[in-house]
Image (cartoon, rainbow, N blue to C red; front, side, top):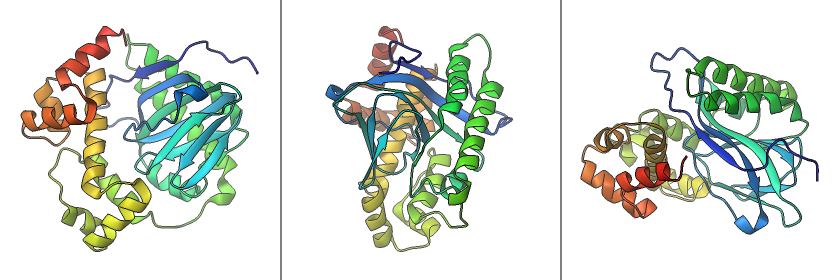
Length: 281
């Protein structure tokens, strides 16, 4: 197996927020991963778009009902609003760099370049420096890395636009994508299925059916999942009081938030934060 540039897995969370909206792209978390087949299928969700660059080995990524092999140099772009999972092949460890990002026009670009239909593009090893640049910037806790991170993400997206230009198309995002974009942007507001159906331009029953098909969940179930993903990120990467974390995740009642969080993760939010920091992350 080709030697990779790291020996252990690393996950880095970005504690810096672009409160003024100065930079087009933001990365909430990124890392290096060495996955083994024994680890099983991973169904992690980071509330955003995830880019995965394979350095060595072989992985398998499921998006909806389709499977894609991840080979050295392959870059896979996943919108985690939809159901997905990944694992390493039985033959060898899967070593990859990854980042979770959001930003101006990224949803439209994802659809425009055809990643909603075909999430993989080959010959992307040249983006390794940009991925490493993001990880290095997040490692630099002494200074705000927002400008560097945004620039590196822009480099990756520019490369993908060049490689996948022939797949570009003028099309409207799916109903589920339209709803997920709005809900993710305003997770702190009170949502109901009627609001979501109005954004999608379809009936509530149609919306429910499409969410089941594309995410494996109901609209409200998907939203609760997204709120829990955001809660984990805030608990790990900020010093916000639990009440403020609850509000940012759409819970006016912190006791309701704690109950849902414990039901989802097995631990209360405060204990989750203590355990995470106790592990030295």
